[in-house]
Image (cartoon, rainbow, N blue to C red):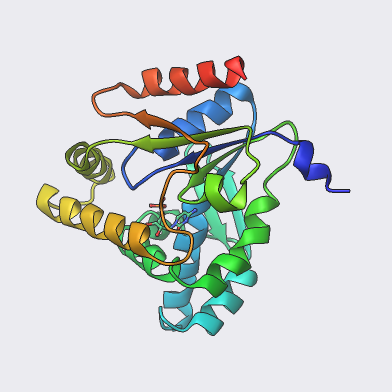
Length: 226
Ligand code: C5P
């Protein structure tokens, strides 16, 4: 018997900068449910590949690395997230633009996705899970209770991402962030394995011009209406 099947999942998918990470975190906090930031797993594979000198197109070596990742998500004393790889704090590396680009490259390799599938599904623990990514509703949790596909205009997404990076003290131009977002969207939507697209039964939510609290409330209203 698959005990996890009865545990509710809210899948929040969408392109980079749509706000899905922030929305997923707030919804999970409000409900007291667990959180899966699936992008962080792909980013960790890219970070570990660079650390171990594995090429980002060596599918077999990357899949092995993905299967053996010794990772832990935790929080710091200030409440901020901490990502540990073999006990080492790699939060800053994982959140870097370089890791984002590397993640997008390794995410196109089927063997890597297969190696990460079970790890992602293992986050489905009572009382429930909020999972954010690109294929939560289409592949990983196809039986999710609620599927949200969060979008925003490319201009707004670039502006948000730019602000996030500036707040972290990373000096990068808006034009460079914008180019990166457009490139990543294209790669994520056009790849043959698990391309970025809304599940047939997903509810579309455009967050352009909406404060994050309003977007969170819309999702919570949807949850209570189910
Ligand atoms: O969401 P985040 O920016 O952390 O994701 C980094 C990259 O990982 C994405 O651009 C995408 O290529 C990949 N990804 C994926 N499937 C997921 C989550 C992320 O392919 N479920």
